[in-house]
Image (cartoon, rainbow, N blue to C red; front, side):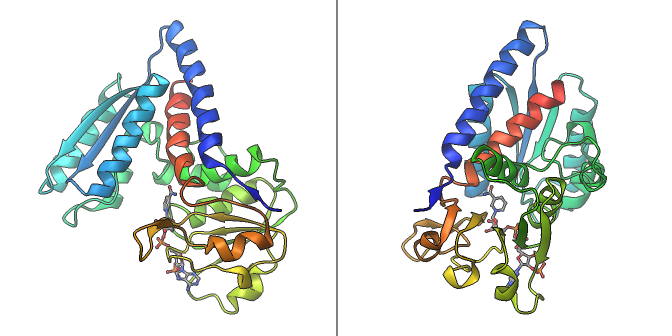
Length: 278
Ligand code: NAP
């Protein structure tokens, strides 16, 4: 029988721990404030921003919402980011992605002060992760490590395979698994004999961005499978990059979609906000 890695439960545990820490910080006269910027009204982004604001309220973090129109210019957005960089009251700045096409996302990310970059996307924080020094770790990969650790899954010495090499998931999760002493292989769209590699994994992280891409033929019997994908299937039901029904019986542990990696992203964002003050 396989274990279902419960992201809802683990993210709630983390939020409760953070709530206590925030109360202690407040008692010490320290408050936490997150500025959340959304440009345009993409419905998915509005849901994500809403969840982040809700989590802030639960934990006791003040959130400042900046809802800018779709036609906002690069200069206007950069001016706001710089103003928030200089505002001592603001500890964290989050710009919800994706941004409208007239805006250069990378320039915006690099403009956020590294010490307020709670998403961990700024080059300084990515570099810190690379060389193993202190910095904010991007929230989804950070959440995956927490899921594994809090489910009692050993990473050290294990063969870890990651499908995907994006800057927000594939690359940082590979670095984090390496930091935890896993033996890591990164696969991507040019990888030859993909299944031969994935079938060697003790821990397989799937961030391929394709619904139900991975099935039982990709995995070694008893592997741990982490599904990062989020999609809607033909029946409008949420599904991941892994075909759960086919794959789960061959695993020792697997994350479901929804309720696996997804809730961890917001919890780790909150973690980064609290540590920005700590
Ligand atoms: P992405 O930027 O589209 O990256 C996909 C990666 O998969 C790329 O590196 C690509 O390789 C690789 N790939 C594509 N086709 C492949 C194939 N046939 N064989 C092997 N590798 C292949 O996606 P992402 O931003 O990393 O996101 C991945 C998934 O996670 C998406 O479903 C996204 O919605 C989800 N996501 C969830 C959360 C959350 O909070 N749960 C957060 C972020 C993302 P190349 O580099 O060679 O093109």
